[in-house]
Length: 268
Image 1 (cartoon, helix red, strand yellow):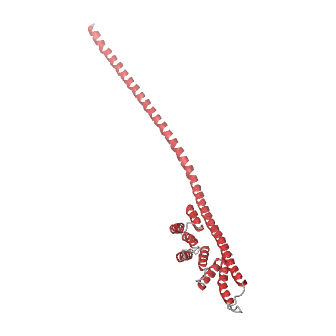
Image 2 (cartoon, one colour; image 1 turned 60 degrees about the vertical axis):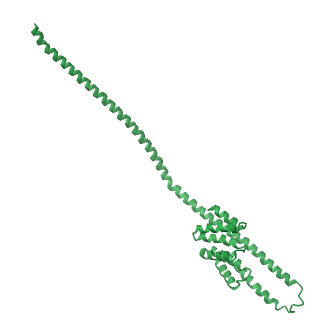
Image 3 (spheres, helix red, strand yellow; image 1 turned 90 degrees about the vertical axis):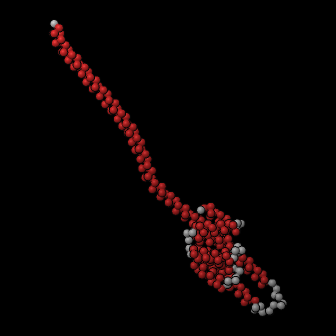
């Protein structure tokens, strides 16, 4: 009986071992599935994060592409505005010079009229008994005084008509023939104005430098400095142009030319 029970024991033991192995195998499979599910969930979470980051980058790239597409138009508009501004400044300078020309022409006409009226008044006075009866000695003097004035007026008239080349030659001829004439400084000024009008900036620079250095006390000296700054600008030398305007402001602060110099410096 005992032997029979002993013989049956190994069978029970085997069954228990089999059951233990089965449970272990089943538990191991269960743990593997949980880990796989967790790993898959982690990957999906990372995928979602990366998808959001990609979406954000796509939106930024779209905005940058839109900005870059409009950039050339913006640059072109700025270039156009800069060109328009430069042209406007040029027109303002020309208009300013024209206004100066009219003002100076009126002043010149006034001076000429005044001098001629004085000559007429002198001619209308009773003759001096001590003077020659024929008056022949007086006529040549009047002619000699009138000839330079007529040449000057002719040159100025040519300038006002826009015949700058002709006016330049006439004023240069006037200066050569009448270097000591009271209008010589004015003639030198108009030489420089003609040169600026003809865009002979080197010539205008030399002429206005000569006028300023030779006649610093003349009423034309401030205008000569203003025109000298324009000549420097025409030559592309903005540094010397600005320095010249500063000299004008320091030496002739109350002159009309100084007011124009101040306005130019504020524009630049």
